[in-house]
Length: 202
Image (cartoon, rainbow, N blue to C red):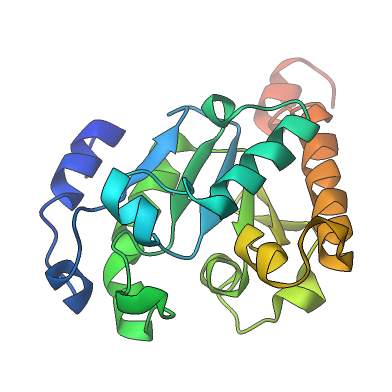
């Protein structure tokens, strides 16, 4: 187990666990605050991400940055990554065995960053984190409590751009979901039961 994100990213940089390694320019690991309270997880790198080595740098990334700023956050305040760390050819959907091969990198990232809130962007990230076959349109905006963390699924920013842009109903929905993220971050951090007992509250 790597003891830092830098070590994990270094190990991932030479990964050949699946066929995606053969067509990549570079592994796109993740970016942001290594101790962020919120982590955003997308599907996989696109063309620009593959070239620059950073997730969400194209048009979808610009929209993500805008949505973050609307709730008082910058990219440097959060951690951003993807389910798969190499670009699928032609930006196709990642295949099940590719997702499985990349899951240890995602698991390691979650353990090291230890975010309080996870925001899954789109179907693939939502299904991986919730570990069930769900439709993003059915679960978006809901709060799921998993292993002490709050998971909030929402649409992928690319889906907004492809589905009518900022005037679409999907844009209104994703703005509502980001407002939910803000509310969760503003809630007091629960005190562990053991600590409460030590304080004599029970």
